[in-house]
Image (cartoon, rainbow, N blue to C red; front, side, top):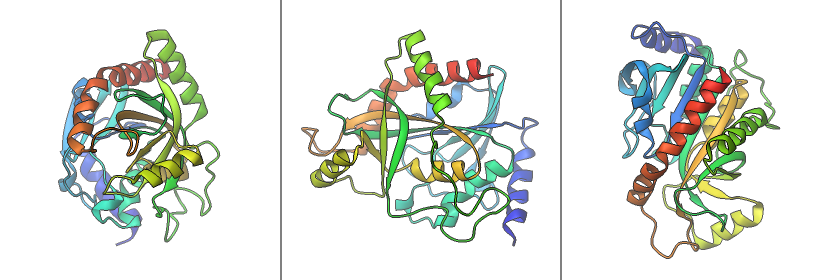
Length: 273
């Protein structure tokens, strides 16, 4: 089946559940799924029911597409995401974001839970992503280019839209949210990083490290989306933390930061509209 036909089948299925046609996509990282409860007029669609939509269940990622509104802004919200370490191909990793681009999405707000490498960060901090370093050894655009979505060689000068970063920093000052900013390093996983890897990433200019976000941003930028990236610093990275890293810590710390992330996203959407 042609890719365009697959997109049409996926989109037609989703459109059965809602009359909304959002232009904004939000992707919720580990432990941040409760944000969906802010949605009004919402409908929930399991990923597993959407034709051609790849997903493997993972703790902290329930695998649901929510469609609804915050204020007057219509939204697609992905509660859960795919990761390279689950065994997905490049084609499978790019499919969800390309589908939403095909469906008319122009803006993406992407969140994650990650480890802090900047020594001024503490667990519970929120970092706005200025840029990323791809250390995954993978690129979701590998393979045939989808010409009707973007060019073969896409520009990455400003993948995390500087206009949206500035607006978010203004919101932080206005509401005293105490947001940080920095560079996110994408790591393949599933094991956590070694002390030497963290040392190297810090030397390269990284402030935080995680196992997601970079693939979605690469695909979103290729499709011309404007992107806001938000990281929840859930733990200090290997060599900086005095205890062993665990996914349970990631999920627990995410809960402590969710109110500020909720406030930021709501204010951003309200002021943007």
